Amino acid sequence: MDKRLVNLKGSENRDTFKQAHKEFLGNGFYGGDLDYVVVEFKPPGIVAFYDYKMPGDSVSNTEVVYYNELIKIAPLYIVESQKPREGQFNIDIYLLGQTNGIDIPPTVCTQEICICKNWFRFRCFEAIMRTEYRKKAKN
Image 1 (cartoon, rainbow, N blue to C red):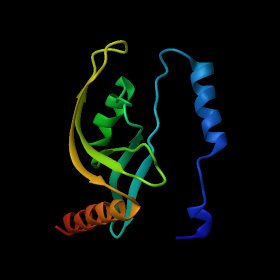
Image 2 (cartoon, rainbow, N blue to C red):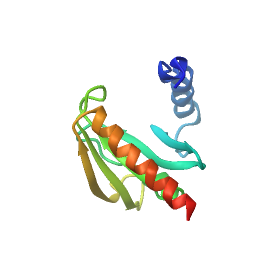
Image 3 (cartoon, rainbow, N blue to C red):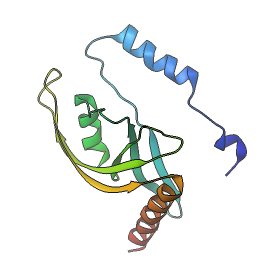
Image 4 (cartoon, helix red, strand yellow):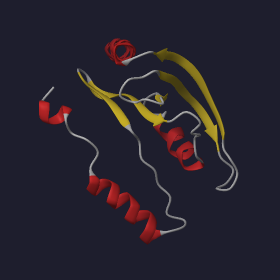
């Protein structure tokens, strides 16, 4: 991978835009962001979505709305880790959620897929996922 791309971090301008959107558009203009989209080129497509959480973070009502739409396209994995540079990574697949309102916590159904002790194990997890995507695309 191009070193320039490897060193690319989140955009300060993107974060400023998201904050300004919340500040200036206010209530009723809901949105969210996703942490990572796993892309394959042969064949081209979306393999999966990742949303990163710290331990204890929960899925919000807004996330349930867009997670439910995203899983129509590809699997969505919730990746939880206290130490994103080192691991351990607890990986759950999001199966379905239901929200009945902004002030009521959503009901979320996930299933633990694996625990990756480090980035090497995470790479193995993702490599298997990509292989399965390519096999499925051939059929």
